[in-house]
Image (cartoon, rainbow, N blue to C red; front, top):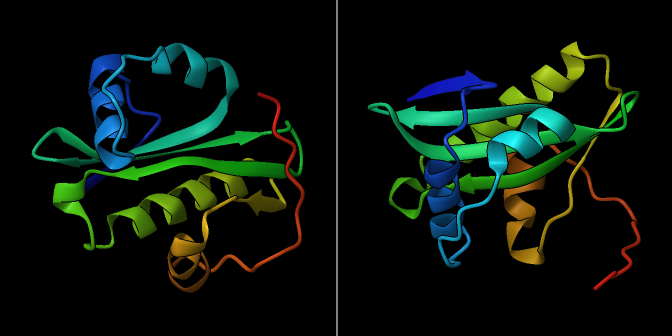
Length: 130
């Protein structure tokens, strides 16, 4: 497995991975444009030059960064790819000077983010906008 920071993004390829990982429809999204504009960094996991995992980190330009879109193709799950993606992304945020790395996750992902990746639970709020 090869992990690549800020790899050149192919929108259809990343959209297909995202759809497979989140069991959604493969609707092509403008990933490359969004990442260049809003992300501090992103990391891809490649197996034989095929994108099989992804994570992005957005930030406030200062102390806080946010993990988003952690995705591993179901055919490559349970191999530590997601953990390595998140740890690589965390190191990139640390190098950029961030002090905190935040992540929101559903209850079934608690063991992944807390036990495997080292996040600790916090109280947080969420406001649905649409």
